Image (cartoon, rainbow, N blue to C red):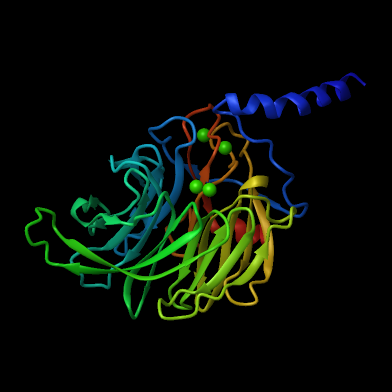
Length: 361
Ligand code: CA
Ligand code: CA
Ligand code: CA
Ligand code: CA
């Protein structure tokens, strides 16, 4: 009886107290009943900024030495952080309010290894960063892309026969698709410059954030935070008609739908999506009809070293063999509550093999 009274008391007052306690989490909805538990193998250093700061990761593959690949993560209050596969911070760029980040490699033989892009709320721009052969990033301030959006939010990259492209969305539901062309750096003292051309615009009815493009299938997946997962052609000259992958159902997907990424395996593979409201991750087939393959949660390992993940914003996946710890690839997941002990937010590394085994993929 006493505990019931206490629960009622908490149920009444907790929602009132939470907004005043910056580090508290929202009370999660229950995870899907069949969600499988996995552990993180490693975690990154905490981001510089306090409170809600870490947001979205991307993985740079070191083609010469995959074990020396790096993770790029946003601190949405400070800039871009880069970590090695042990989680040590190896670079920080004070680029401002960078929210989402993505990356695409250049073809072999290029002067640069990859191009990274980030949505930047400091001036509602897209910031570009070239990555050299050792994984060092250079911010191209002279190539900043002004979106004209009231508030830039989600971002993902795409590459097809029309070249390197960026999708960016605003909190108002508007999307822009930009084509990027490398140009001689001219008067700039930066090593390279990019010209951006607006290729296409479309919109969704309410706030979106997470997105991922499938380059070979030329398909864009996007998350409308309180509605569900949608997909459409990623080609700038194609129809913007959308199809639903899954609506928020209150069991598998709880608002917000957040980060999403692809595990690419030949022509097949999986789409992994953060169901932020119940601290879980839903896995779907990469190809239509996008069958649901199961959900997982990342729980505390119990050795007081690496904690589980809660209230995740962004995540990213690679199927590349990154060495003994990640032989079938790596999932990097933003952790909304980095504890054991409590520190600033960070990113967790989960071996794909654990997930594939748990979900029988
Ligand atoms: Ca969001
Ligand atoms: Ca955690
Ligand atoms: Ca976010
Ligand atoms: Ca921790």
